[in-house]
Image 1: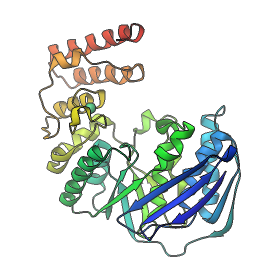
Image 2 (image 1 turned 90 degrees about the vertical axis):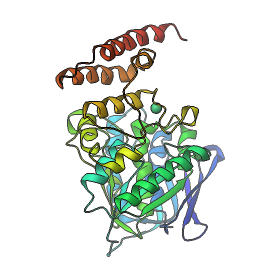
Image 3 (image 1 turned 120 degrees about the horizontal axis):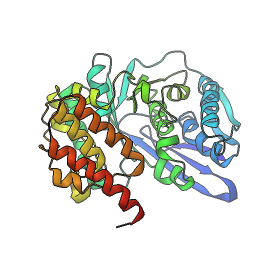
Length: 357
Ligand SMILES: [Zn+2]
């Protein structure tokens, strides 16, 4: 695999990636801030894909030597987690570089969801910038959703008193999706690291809000062991807080009027709504807000048991759904209609699995 970085101006970098059988991809990443146009941001972007295809990489550019060294750790982790599908590979670059001075900024990825609000609020004092990415959860061509989510992130960042770094990238849609690199289990941390390291002119540290608390850790594309292995001599990547689970995080952010005015947890965009209020993520967040006694402008309450009864819960999410029932019980909530509806949704989802709608 050959990766040839290019620049279309200070705020727009890209790479032409030529893979096996002459397949070629052009990836563009642009921002309202200037970006690092060396090959370094393309290391985390290309490595998981090359490991899956099991080919070496040649970078037509300079790779940071600390990034090169650290990426051994990333390779070890991915190869150990997924030995059948991800293989250790090698890469070469034109030459190596390292930075002595690093930018003072501390960035934090900010999609406007529970994890990002939790990090933005609890680490407010050290964070200097929030980073919004269009192209990962939101498809690059979905301008409607992209614009609405960006407007929400801008308003939230401004209320939190932090400048918002806005990034658009086709990395996922134009490259990793073509190789079916699983976004959740493998790639999203590496994709965020692409953005974090591209922002090295401004940020010396970038926080990736945690996906899971310590006791729920599992092989996952963003993980406290994996994320730091994408760090360079210029940018340290930190994996956010491990102390709080989903409901604990919600309980913390309900106290923030900014979070309750702009919270966005849903990317389904059904009927063009800010949060669809019918999917599992919306439901779980509404339940958390209800348990914490909060009120959210972007997620209505109370929850309608009829809607819950009609939900289809995917097999992978049923355990979380049952945990939510336990949580209701443990917190002494007396919502018999809602609990009945949740149990009925689980039973119905088992049946629907075998008798598709
Ligand atoms: Zn939803």
